[in-house]
Image (tube, rainbow, N blue to C red; front, side):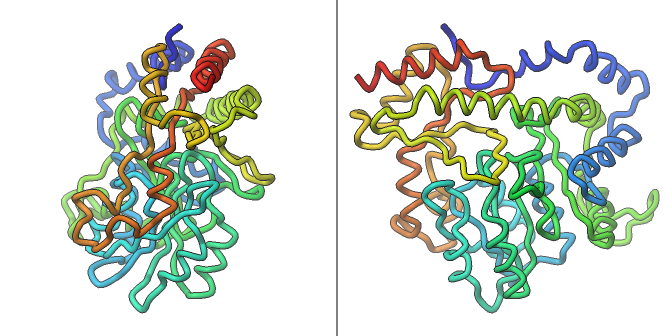
Amino acid sequence: MKVPFVDLRAQYLSLREEMDPAILGIFERGEYVQGPTVAAFEKAFAQAHNARFAVACNNGTSALHLALWGMGIGEGDEVIVPANTFIATVEGIRLTGARPVLVDVLDDSLNMDPAAAERAIAERTKVILPVHLFGFPAQMDALSELARKHKLELVEDSAQAHLASHKGQFVGRFGKACCFSFYPAKNLGAAGEGGGVLTDDEELYARMRVLRDHGMTEKNVHEVWGHNYRMAGLAAASLAVKLPHLPAWNEARRAHAARYCERLAGIPGLTLPPAPAGIGHVYHLFVIRITDDFGMDRDTVRDRLGEAGIGCGIHYPIPIHLQRAAADLGYSHGSFPVVERACEQILSLPMFAELSDEQIDYVCDTLGRLRK
């Protein structure tokens, strides 16, 4: 049996009757950049999260930059961010000219450790930027209180956590802004790249709309230096079709995760994702950890699963602070021991809404045989 890591074609086939007319409509109207379809998606996406405003843009990296830029974050400022994330989170900070200050993560969720974040607060700190990694919300009650205590802004990176929730409240509803990616493989993925920012702050909303479109307040009137972060019409059309299906897809992912956990429970050397009460994990990724008790290392397990036709991923094999691009930040091996240990153990198993029980069972059976 073949089990792909993700199957974008299966999702398209399930939506073909809705998707094809929506995409064709973009061509018929010549609505290739911004336009009414983008505006309609912005309104629907904000409503889905109970937010006042959404600003769509061309990708998740731009969304992060746009939010911080719109808040006035720049050179001389510091932004606290977990060392365990995709590099785009840190790129969004660096594009403003601010300095990213990395911190270690909690050993169970691999999300930002609030205590580590508090120790990192300094005179130039302006923002705490947690990441809801793998679809698992960060500890937003503790981080929100930390931001209030020190009079800092809170910006959320929800690139992997569309409609995830923390104690009954959607992620994206805790800070000044929340940034999303609509990369095709995300829980809500576009036909191409896409990104967006949620906010309740009307002034920030207005600034981001101007900044994403060359600083224009009206055609050919440029009030400030901006950028071209506009969303393509094809991306918006595909997202508008998919958004109503997102809650059901997230529930399917939760059901898949429950089956994985039931089948893999008790296998020595496998650590499964935590599932604390009150946390609405949306399982963008299903990440296990291969520890010494399993009898072989993570890379060997990944290779054996690949030989059996099972696609896997590692998110992420090299932490931010050990990337060559981050050498100027001054970190080194040993700076963030929880992150470094996890990067040697984590393995992402196949996860997408259309995954079948038979495919999950094949993955679990194959892992069980490897342990024997």
